Image 1 (cartoon, rainbow, N blue to C red):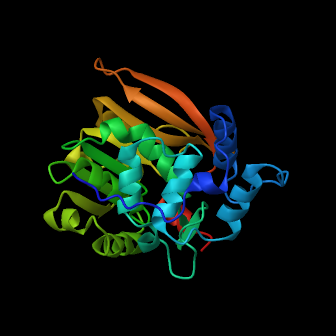
Image 2 (image 1 turned 120 degrees about the vertical axis):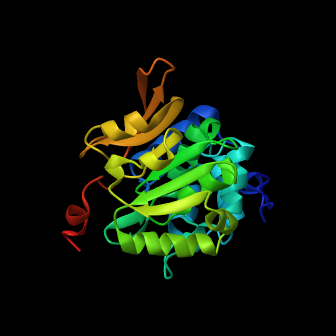
Length: 279
């Protein structure tokens, strides 16, 4: 599907010198481990100003956020840049919060919308399995943002499914998408949200080329492995207190290969009653 990509209002290179690839990766891996509040950085470092801008201010425009994510290596391909520019994050963040800072935001019911750099990371990891006509599953779809991105990438000939066990969030995510560029895909049925236990997946649209899990599981749920297509990829945070973002590729013979991409911190993948216990 063709995506409209608007240019940013300010050039990042005009504000910050270009860091080395190694420096970018060190900076981003720090953000993955503790996205909301980076530690104090030396004021002579360009990262000091970037951290201040992301955590204390607003980028004001969705496209500017994407440009900064590109500058610091979270967004590395046009495919991901275009979809993140097309799906406006502000439509998926509750009123009263600043949508364009690189931080997770609460969306109610002890759930969050992930930080933009985590959305970018997962889209980059899954992009080759989000081609037109492919099937994608978003477990713990929450605000609906990433499911909408998946739908735009697989197009009307594909299928994007969001699973969320909080009915109120399914209603809210549907309303969010209805205001976004992905609204036609929701109307034609290629994008859908369902109330269900995400640990069980959604067999009706399986097998999936791409599966994303937006909450940390103590171990990889077997139903999700079974619903992953040979040649497909799953991205899932695994662990309790210490968590790793794992990338699972299913081989053509049904076996799987697993690698850790980064240390992360997600809310737990659990039952509806457990999630609402401390509400």
